[in-house]
Image 1 (spheres, helix red, strand yellow):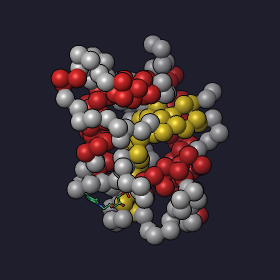
Image 2: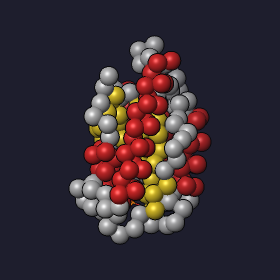
Image 3: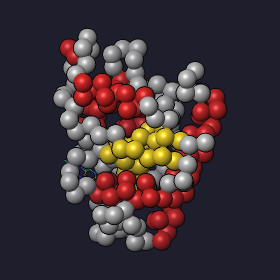
Image 4: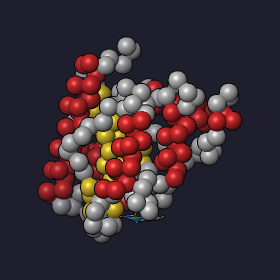
Length: 189
Ligand code: FNR
């Protein structure tokens, strides 16, 4: 069966290393994983004043999440947490109360950093948020990518064989995790 996976790239930067990482993951994903980016850069800053009437851009964002079997977060670490833009997007998706788009939606987290601990702290922070949003998360394998220059090029080609193998395995594990979650939590249940 096909698994439709929406991915959110935590960085808005044009030269984002996490965008490069996402490109590599799309290339290395098993053939039954259909990868689609869910962009969030045009969302205004969330406030519950919008709850009564979400703007079209926010409705589309929530519909995009509702339309996928699982969500993959590919995010940098900013100041030991996730970037504000990504947190804002999650807040939009989680509301209005009772209409949280992440509930029962399987997720996985990965990130690249120029620092040696490879977004580990940001990922822990994101995992707390996703727990509250009731998203079943893949616990393992964890993936902390220390991005060295030229590790992944603009086309998503990985220059280090062991890293390429690691990323391919990460996607295979995520694919199996999604299958297990969908077995107990069918999408239209
Ligand atoms: C960073 N960077 C960073 N790196 C890290 O490992 N831990 C951190 O807490 C931070 N904090 C941080 C804050 C801000 C505002 C910026 C702009 C950067 C460095 C970061 O790893 C590097 O800029 C990456 O290139 C960010 O990933 P993207 O945006 O290129 O995908």
